[in-house]
Length: 125
Image: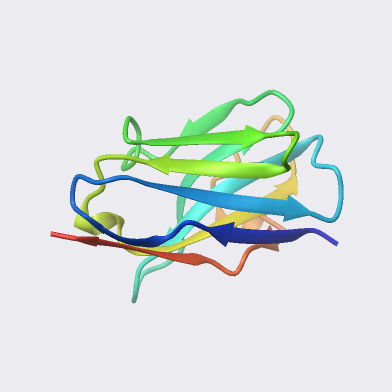
């Protein structure tokens, strides 16, 4: 059973930075894709970024490209989301997700089997 636990959310001013962590457990994550999604009040869950565990290949939503960076630490079984130049529109609950991967991008929420509980990120103007 895969277990994902996010941490690192909080309140930050516009232009600031935060680093989210996703601690993964329950199996080895070779061949997995690890994604970050976010959901603002009244909106659908939105893809942010994904990393392929084995290769480190990454893909970003246009809205965060150049500001956010996803990475993974295989030794710690942890995925990180470094968020810089934060904007008020980045305010949301951020979720870590995992699925057995392949060559596809996996940018839709329904494509993921496992989810964390989420961590709140609030960016004040």
